[in-house]
Amino acid sequence: SVGSDTIVGNRLQAEKKYLRQAYEVLYEIGIKLSQVLWRKLSPDDIEKAESSLSHFTYELLIEENYKLAKNLLDFSCCTLKKWGAEGTRLVYVVNRALAYKFSGDHDKCISILDDEDWSACGDNYNLCVAVLREEFDLAKTLMLRIGASGSVSEIDYIEWPCFKDFRSTDQFIDAFTEVFGKAPTTIEQVDNDEFESQSDNNVEEREGEEKSEEVDDSVELEAENKA
Image (tube, rainbow, N blue to C red; front, side, top):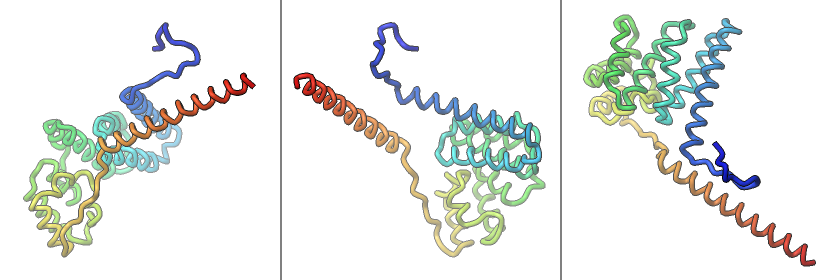
């Protein structure tokens, strides 16, 4: 709230933490509300709604914003009841488990996976489950069985957040090399702290420029008054 000592015309300051929290609240509410309304008003477009929600949650996982990803994936798996296909729902289940695992709650990750019957699912699902359970020998076997032209592509192995830790294991490197005939490449990740630091510097530079402009304006005004 604005303090009683605030003077009209003064510039208000907001900390980066406050702005980020406000952004995340609005982001979460906006997506949840749009999904509920979309599915209610246009039920035939459920696959489009799922695709949109998948895009946002996947980007959050890529950015390692696991807190917001968990909130949206909890909403997806626990609140939304209708799905266009069972396979789509299971993708959300895997991503939800992933979000909990990489935010430090491995037990919750396993609990989410244990609530599903994966026995009738394809190798691509079971590969992700094995990786999240850290059953890397089984994951290697599944990679070899999927092969180079299966349901998981070379770029999937390099990009999917699910394989974040698995990519550094001997099992992954050996299986990838055998399947694709070459060692896996790596993706350069943007360091979040460095990015935020650069953003802070840009803000400070902009504030400095604005202060300089204010000084210039006051000098010009003073000169005009003297004239």
